Length: 556
Image 1 (tube, rainbow, N blue to C red):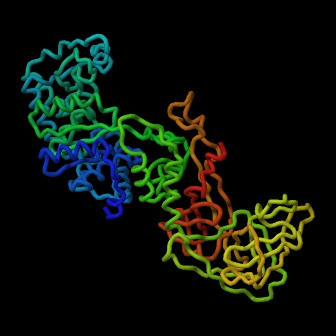
Image 2 (image 1 turned 180 degrees about the vertical axis):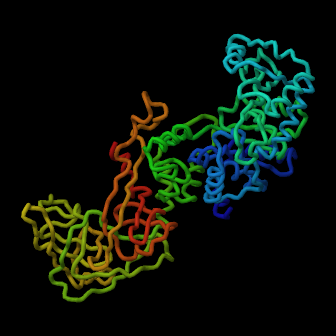
Image 3 (image 1 turned 45 degrees about the vertical axis):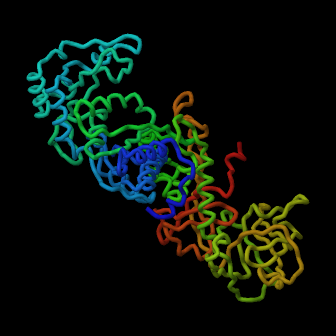
């Protein structure tokens, strides 16, 4: 991780930092160890980014380490594609893990732990169906009851559990349950399931196992094996902490501790993997990395920078109450960083031809700054000649008095070039404007202006001689409502029909021919853009990251 990230740390402590500092001050730990434990069943999203920044940020701040541990205990939904995608996303965000680990690394050890619980009389094999187990657990106001299988002897349970491992039973035929307290007010403590039978090929262990540990069993024990000091989860795992602590206590293993923080959900999108998968499979988006998706892959393809996402995670903070964060906060963070680093370029989306009738030269080169916010940004050469293109929306034939763009008889400055005046409007047989004949003022050259003419409008433009066509994809928010996951009806009813607008054959200045995938650009007066990976030398495609201003709030 770079020193830049350390410089971004908040001066005031959040509640987790207070806990860590208190533990270190008390000598409870010499160093801290955190972990980020994604299940490899999908791509990481903006919610995961908060957890990544939190876990890795704590270990960076306090000189510890963070393990990347894949919670690969459900072979049906997991794939190595997701493993590689997760690793790429974490590294792209700017973090490196201390160890790359997998829950499957511990399958043998976890099995041994389960045997220990059976031998202590603290676990038993249950033949009940999932429906029967749910019914026997009772209700929040009524205690549950154990069934006849809870009376099996230790020897019988050991034999049955071994047979489960050896594949002698079908899926769902038996489970291993902890013997805790069927009258506990915490429903999760009412003899939770520790192992289930699942005959499925695992992406790492193949067909070696026929039983797989449940999250509640794999989580705390994996933390303990790795000597995780601060195991940080989201608030929905608060009820699971009691099971976490019970298992560690009964197994008499390293006492890892679980702490919880609240989710910070992003407005106008979803972070449910199931619903994101539905968007992909039903073709509402082009894939997991569609620039409208809240996945890290989608945000990266759209042009967000790691710095802007880390800034967002820092700004939204860490708390104990769930909150819905306006998407404008993330967009603001993007603008803040992109304004500092993006190269300025000119692209005309809807071209209108301009002929400068009094320009006599063959053409010339003009200097234009790459980024006024970067003192070391330098300049680039842009070509200027008799024929240019401006935006069609930058001309109005019948303009109001306070219209500061181009109109008949009015003057404007062309960015980094000259002041021009519209003298004649050319139309086709249908009355459509096809060309503007203008004159320019030779002594009005930018940086050398001695004309004494003062204009209020500056337009971007491209030279007709060396501009080239590009495709521009203007992305907006995927949903029309703030919280589509909790809106009435089907969440797909709220998909924004205008979340993607494709501009074919926009005209770009020649310098953009050298654009690279990792470069960020500000198209003057249009927004921030990046080159899409699907681009070819024959067809460059640019994705809009964000507009120059919060146009969404203005539209509302």
